[in-house]
Length: 188
Image (tube, rainbow, N blue to C red; front, side, top):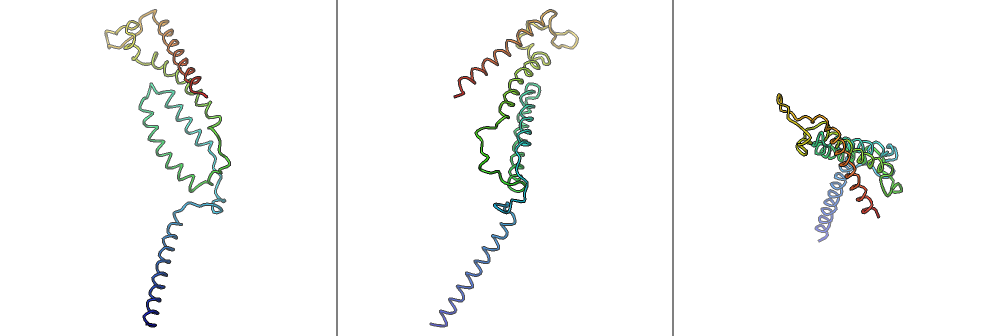
């Protein structure tokens, strides 16, 4: 019984040692791919969110200010944002120090009003593009336009430009009024 117990104990210890070394080798392999944490990431640069917000604000401006000129821009921006999400995740976990929990803020700060100004400007730019640089308005208000006999393009009737300006200003004011009402109703 003594020899069998010793052999069993030796086998169990050997198996446990092998298991511990296997777990240790897996942990070592995981440590090579694990992002630094705690004291290990103190040598990394501190994360600065200004560039990320600036990049998103510029993209928001392109998409909203010129939506009527390039409607596919929103879909392309969504695809770019997916790539940006992965690259920012890698940057936050491998390149920069993790943001401190004490830096929590209730909103995006000055970027909120910047986005609101761009959204208001988008109303003006898109209506101007819609009214002056496209043929879409000719389909909505055909009484202001005539068809050119040579190339079939729509052209504004002489003396009807003032109606176009009044129509665009009325549409702009209506959209701004809807936006203001939404702000007043949805803001606590």
